[in-house]
Length: 253
Image 1 (cartoon, helix red, strand yellow):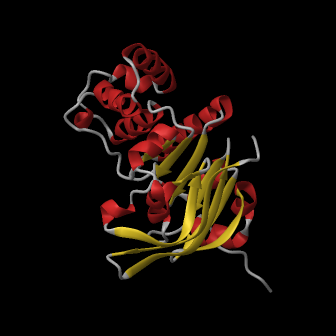
Image 2 (cartoon, one colour):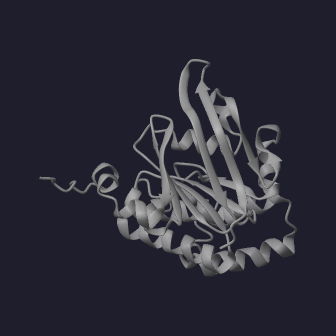
């Protein structure tokens, strides 16, 4: 894993509708080739941070009021979301967003079109995707809206991979899925990180699974980054276990 910084979020503040403050001086750095997790309770600011990173806040009546975000030297706040995708910053939104009336394969192809891929390249990429997610190969002709929640999440992630990301940004990929499916998805992401050097920024309420796979993580509370450190180290801390992993804190005498 290289140590150079790929994404830098510096002292970012954000609000919605010019009144609801969502982020208060959040700073995050993602190094090239690492898995970085944002953890925290619902409403902590994880989704807002990810939308800020992809310059999508305006679509939610949000705005950045202070701070700077840079991706591979580019000023994110001065770069359109579509251009960020072409530069390699690809986000998979919360909620397993698929085109429900399209087949699984048609959904995947839209990810390649967003990047401007040619037909031969799309065919090669589809073959790779079906090796990564064999279940999607089986379901390639199925209507996405009629597939299971796990299959829709795989489709959403695979569509992002079809855009050839340098940094894949995932918002709550475990939401609403069975533990076995969640484990499978995170193991696949870990394999891609190790074999392809894919950088991953993931926001997760399921802190246990996130910290098990992340190289580093930041804890958000009420729009503030309160703690940052190596994933295994945070996972071993008693206070993190009590607050985010659902384990009781050790009693002190």
